[in-house]
Image 1 (cartoon, helix red, strand yellow):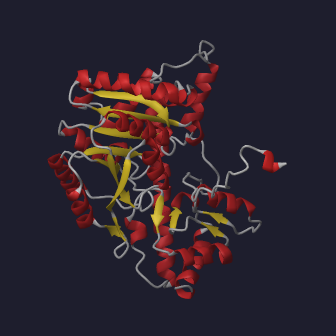
Image 2 (tube, rainbow, N blue to C red):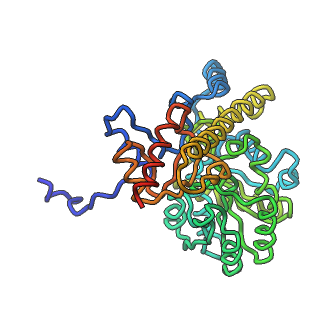
Image 3 (tube, rainbow, N blue to C red):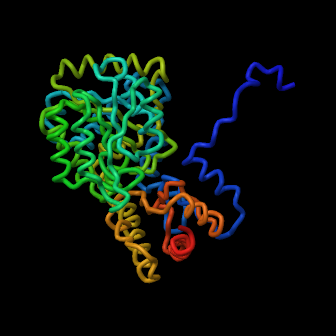
Length: 407
């Protein structure tokens, strides 16, 4: 009998708001159903994509009979760490040349953020982190469970469907000195709204003048604009001034390695000595958490990054993914314009990255799910990567109906 279970008093937890969208989509039997909730790239045919260069790297690894399945060190695969730091900070980064960076392999973006958060909660003097409003749903939980106090700074302006830059500067300006600030390196999730280079420079100046500690979440390098260097511009700006910062990297999107859970946490320090002490403490965070990271995905990344031809092949495939998403934005904007759908939809082509923050409200989203079998998160965020030329008309019909029929 259930009542005899020591767990009988456990309540059923709600579905994860993002992953729950896919659960609902899978239960729908309509042939017209469309899942725009998932943060994963899809081809024009709506299928998941494994990059050719990834298949090639994987084949090389499998064919190499000298490879074994031994444990990696606590900090992960050395080549992977070195190459990951180079990818985000730039090959000629003074911080790397001066050995002021410590990089540890982690479990994708989530794991990198969590290890960084646990480290800060244990060793940093200011236990407050400011995160943008809105932000990825998991951020609040990651930092809160690690023991940091989570506060928000203004970021998105629903009226312009763009950046509330004034609000952002006011909130960071009012943050206590030394506070940690989470920054999306590019392709802000969920809004797709990024600061301009000039705005980034103002943010940098303000943060450095107040001694705020930047913690970058870089989940989309190369995936936003199609250029690995351009998408790392914000991070490099903060490293160039000689100051300290943290950066979490994920290879889920830009190499399509979602399920391999490949990521890295880098901490840029003032001196090589500090970096080495920081690394010794990161090991103490990781060891009781998961001992050491998995070997396969990191080996794929290292194989591609250290071979010039494979690296070049990767950049071509990466740009093709970014370009398809940019073209989906244009097609959706053009279709809504041609349809005469009320409102200004230019934000669809101004925003960048995997997601568009449509500006649709909860009722309109619910209407589109019920009447058109289109699934997305209730905040109106849609994954552009889930769209195709074939499904743009269906989505246009749904948005048009939602806007004209639901307030």
